[in-house]
Length: 44
Image 1 (tube, rainbow, N blue to C red):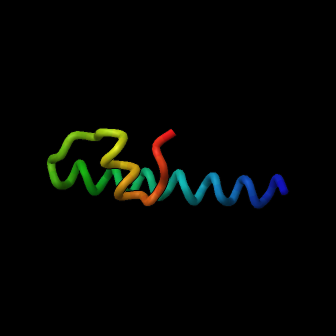
Image 2: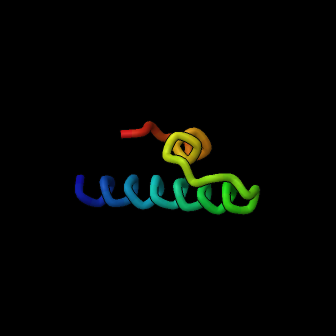
């Protein structure tokens, strides 16, 4: 269970980092809702 949690955590983290890079490349603000939408995760 710990291993799968860690894998999911890392996958989500990399999605968020990729979304941040994409927004920065487009010159847009790094807003939580925009990052979540691009990364496909919920805002919590």
